[in-house]
Image 1 (cartoon, helix red, strand yellow):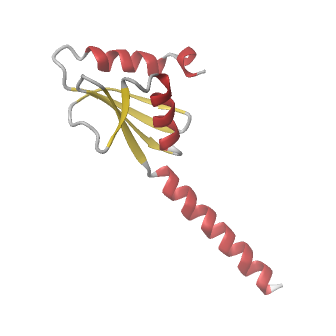
Image 2 (cartoon, one colour):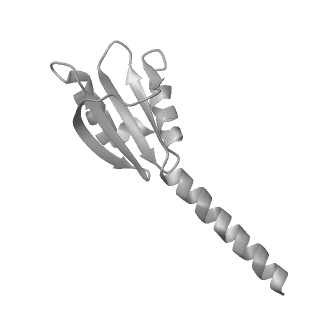
Image 3 (cartoon, helix red, strand yellow):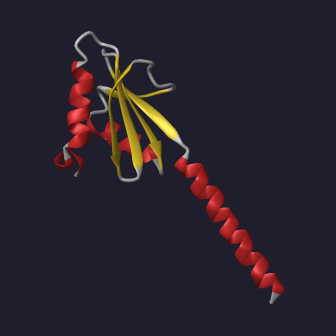
Length: 108
């Protein structure tokens, strides 16, 4: 009976470690020709970035690091945390990104 308990304990520990690693991941996407970025963190963050890139891969690209700029908005969706930053003079692209993140119909 003891080997079964050890196996179960190892499986539970592995699940906790995997879940912890997933919850602390992040990625960022940028919009070509602008100073706007969206950083996604939380559970399966890369899937969130992939979803954003799938909207229009000609203009949205994966960034190595998030842009340092004004935080325009923060949105929680699907166990993920989205932070939109923009350094442009009008912050127009950042505001459009925030509106899209808050619009549930754009996430189908």
